[in-house]
Amino acid sequence: MFGYAGKILHVDLDTGKSSVEEIDEGYCRKYIGGNGFGIRLLYDHAPPGVDPLGPENPLIFAVGPLAGTTAPTSGKYVVHTRSPLTGFQGEAVSSGFWGIALKQAGYDAVVIKGKSEKPVYIFIDDDVFSIRDANALWGKDALETLELIREEIGDDNVRSASIGPGGENLVRYANITNDRHRQAGRTGVGAVMGSKNLKAVTVRGTGSVTVADMEGTLDHCKELYDVCQSPLTGAYRSLGTQVSVMIHQNQAALPTRNWQDSVFEFAEKIGGEYIHPRWVVKTLACAGCPIGCDHVTLVSEDEEGKVMASVEFESLYALGSNCCIGHFPDVNKAVDLCDRLGIDSISTGVTIGWAMECHEKGLLTKEDTDGIDLRFGNAEAQRQVIEMIAYQKGKLGKMLAKGSKAASEELGEGSEKWAMHNKGLEYPGYDLRGLKLSALGFNTSNRGGCHLRNSGYDYDLKGKVDRFTAKEEYGALVMGRDDLYSITDSLMLCKFSRGVLDDYEKFVKIYNLVTGFDMTEEEMRMAGERIWNLEKAYNVREGWKEEDDYPAPRIMKDPITSGVAKGHLVTKEEFRMMHKAYFKERGWSSEGIPTRKKLNQLGLGWIADEIHKEAD
Ligand code: SF4
Image 1 (tube, rainbow, N blue to C red):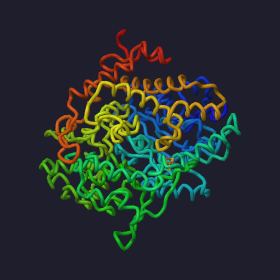
Image 2: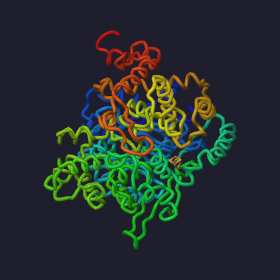
Image 3: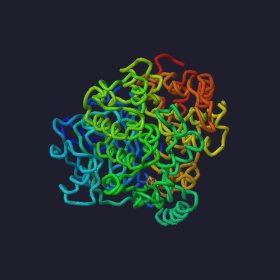
Image 4: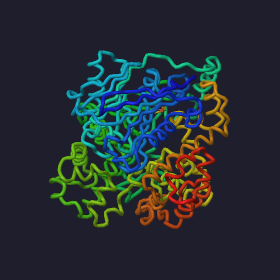
């Protein structure tokens, strides 16, 4: 096959053995790659009800069919597993160079099961597979680990995806780091890796990826590169995602003090326009990306102690405004700490924000916090708690390492009302009370509170819809975006290639040039719908219920307090109306379960019996 490697590597850490499975054109056309391969492999290899931190839970890495070709921004990889944070589909995407290395080594995916007796790392050296001792690496931070493995192998070109202490200590939102500044950040995939005593997956890929129509692909990619460098992606190139701080602030959509406010008094001081002239020292790009959105910051020795970090908007929100920390060098330090310790900065910041509000309301006293003054705005306290979480130190560290949902259930006393998550996944930095299309899109995401499954915010924030009015028609809009983004994440394209590779016509053109297939736009759209339905079916199998999609109580009860969105919230009735409309558009039951008819239509009839105890 062209584009695809046509092979999946299976690794059993119980026995140390590996095997290779070949895949055919039919499989590729149905599931495309990346996210599609990941969810199909998860469905097939995770026993129903599997303990997320038990050896039987598979950890799956997958890349897309365009990885290793000249298609821009196509080198991402995705990790699938049953999430220890949500109990549902765990899924996290990362950029960088690791994904291309895996394809060049000859694989479209790796499925890892079992648990090693001792710390190890996997080395995929083209077609030679080995498991190596990682005793000396255990306890090292995620960034140091990447360097130590390069030194041990003696090759600067090996690429590793590694966990830090957070993953080793089973923090439920631990991440996986590659290429220093890139993380598969969400849903706790790093904790699953730690539960297997697996410190890293290292790849050396020296092969090449062949395409069906070399000349056609090159010509087309030249055009795509020009679009990548046009004004369409200008904001990402000039200020990166840091630009979003002031955009959200001006729309009263920047969650502040654990979503008690939506306008942050120090927003300007953590916004891209302020950060850039002072601290941005270089811009980095992932493999094959002409956009280069990663604006790396360096706070000098004289200022606050030398710290270099890659600070995205989501970290500026979660560790900045959400914890009321408005001094950029403090946010920079907190991001660096999370990255080194290998924990997701969004879940970390939102969980600490929840704890700060508990402290403010007298539910967490200094006795509970080991003497730490956990008030909003205390950056030193935030750093101490980040360390406690990563090492599960003390009662507080252990509680917060479970994430805001489980921590609030443990503490009780009404604190569940200000735990800002959906299905256990902490929300990103979009105040949904004044973004009603996004409220539907974020909360129906199969991996929990997430902005990356349909980009509903693009419609709300750019005024393409009336963001303050809930409408039934949002059901169809969100469904269409879900399915489209299922393909983006299966071709493993960057979301920042908006305007470049962002509709079925464009997807099909590059896909057919690379693979030589004759995929139609409708076939591709249906693949997106199939992938979304399979994810949903997985969640239903693991116990999903309609009410799991409802927004966090604060979104439905406490109106926004100031700014242009003052007074807005999403009532339960509004959400229910949009939710039912969404189910109807999807052809699901009125309780949101994919029907037999829909599953059959999508070629997923083989799972119908498992998720339907009774006939529809
Ligand atoms: S736009 Fe940014 S995240 Fe996306 S591929 Fe390019 S550098 Fe990587």
